[in-house]
Structure formats: C-alpha cells, structure tokens
Image (cartoon, rainbow, N blue to C red):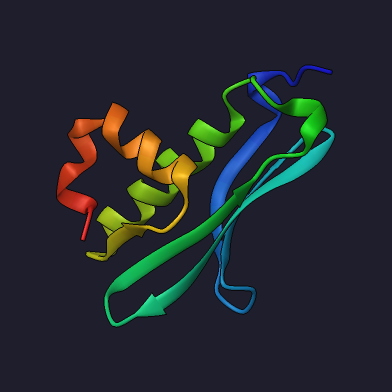
Length: 97
C-alpha cells in the first residue's frame, strides 16, 4: 500500500495521550513521549507496517521537532528511530536536549 502525500494530515500533539499523531489515508502514525520540564522524551514511534518505507515516520518526526522548536521545547531521543533521524538532520540540532 502506498499513501498519497496530499492525503497526509498535519502532525498534532495529543496532550492527553502523551503522543504526537499524524493521520493519513489508511492509518495513523504516532510518537509517544513523556514530559520532563521543557523536554519531551520521545520513547516510541510507530507507523502501521503496511506503510513502512514510505517516509511517513520521517515526516512524523520532522513534525515533532518543528512543534518542539515552535514551542521552545527540547527533544530527548529515547527511541532509535528518532535518534537516527536527528543524526541525519543536523538542521534540527538546536532542538535536541
């Protein structure tokens, strides 16, 4: 299955659920986190298996970093996907705690 770029929603923070979510035609990707002051410790990211390899996880994590930057919060990469993404995107180094 593939998903069309125009059918991908914005990354939104679900405060009550302690996760960021990105809806798209056919599913929902999310990144779970816990708070520590102004830091967001991202502990897990998940994209439905049928959509792996399509860049949805990267788009989700970019949205998490953009949201954190806009709200003057910092990210702690508590999952390997987020840590790997951050290494590949040094333009977001200022967002890392």
